[in-house]
Amino acid sequence: MNFDSTSTIFLIGFPILFGIMALFFLVIGLRGILTKRPFLVSNRWLLLIMFAIFVPLTLQTLFFPPPGSFLVKWLNPSIFIVVLVMMCFALRGYVAYGVTDTSFRDGLLAGLQKLQLPYEESLSIVRLPSVEADLQVSVQAWMGAGQIKVKQRGHGSLLAEIISEMNEHFRMSSTPANLTTCIFFVIMGVIMITAGIGTVLLFQ
Image (tube, rainbow, N blue to C red; front, side, top):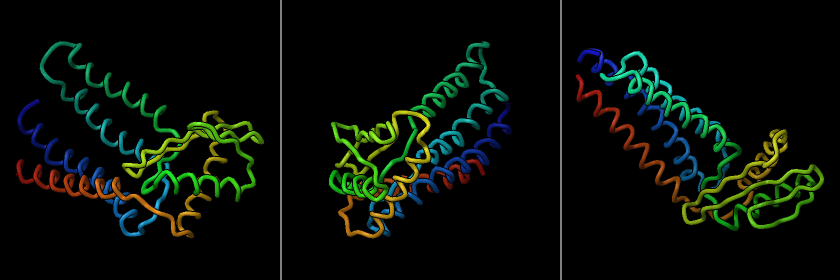
């Protein structure tokens, strides 16, 4: 790969990647800051961002391999593929932003009661005996973030209904919010925009 090819990749590809990441960070961060309310979004959006970042880097390594052996050429794509597969399993369910321990629990229980779903609470698990499903929940209260997913497969539509009711509860109630993650995301978005502009200026 010659210098012109490298310059083209950096001049076009990297600003696009920075722009995609900046858009994700700013949309999430500004939504929390402007509304001052917790909310949940699907982890599929984060997975799409991961694909948008890793796939071009993988293709770049395949079509413009670094100097070295056959192993060097395929090492990075193999790592990217393994990471993406792991992320597909890890990024199931939904992530909550702007939540506290209290607001997350109140929103979840309000959603279950609205859907008339009996529940049994235990540490990090909310059992739904009527549908034989277990909700796995975790909250990082100091960061204002949380996660919820169904342990068993085949309950995606049910989880979507629960999340919809939780978001409705957050919209309609004056619940406390921790915007630490949202503020961090806005800062990261600004950094990504700056990095994209800096890359364009550097290779002009």
